[in-house]
Amino acid sequence: MATVFTVLLILTSLLLIVLVLLHKGRGGGLSDMFGGGVSSGLGGSSVAERNLDRITVGAGLIWGACVVALGLLLKAGN
Image 1 (cartoon, rainbow, N blue to C red):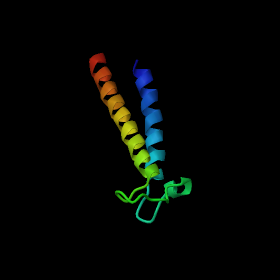
Image 2: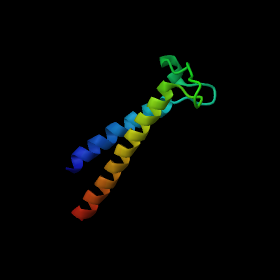
Image 3: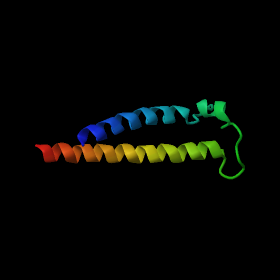
């Protein structure tokens, strides 16, 4: 079971790295290359940026759950 969580942790870690790099910084980001440059009038952020935010938060929650699960499995194993 720990192997499954370890693999999932590695995959979500890599996904989080890519997602964070896609976010717009001060001068724009890689998300502008994929249509993130068109902003909406409400809130000042584009639909692509908001969806990217949601995906990043979801991946972060999965990553955090994997860390907690691995910690509990390792503690129970000792």
